[in-house]
Image (cartoon, rainbow, N blue to C red; front, side, top):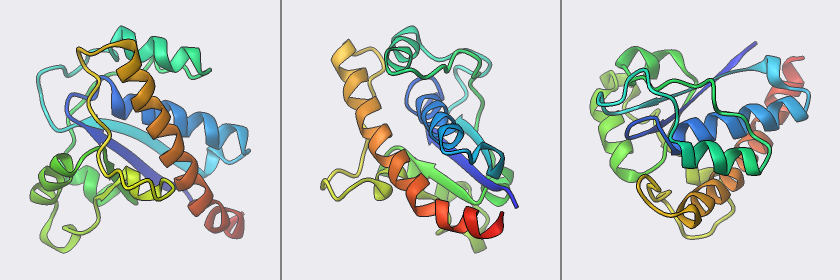
Length: 161
């Protein structure tokens, strides 16, 4: 059994590739990497094929994550059908994903922050064009939510092994 996880932001340059890299690292450290298909995509088309931004790469590297091999791509309706968990960075992305989703899967996309401890925060702010602190804040939120996601899915994975 493989569980598909897809992280979504706007351009697939900052938040979603960071989430992909963080979750991949957490799953690997837990010995569960083979249980997941992990990917990321963006709702927009303007940066397809580009690597994550340098500040995102730097913020990830400072915490031990390598996101340099990720390339931006656009999310499709087929992605929503294919992946078990389609996780949006903001409520705006969630709306876009629900419009894109086949009618029977309109509730499948969820907010990544729904897996974080109850902080009262729903959206991970876009650090693009911001300061190093903005990237640090985003990666901190992403770490919190992806740890919660892995904790939620681990019993299901262990049962299937």
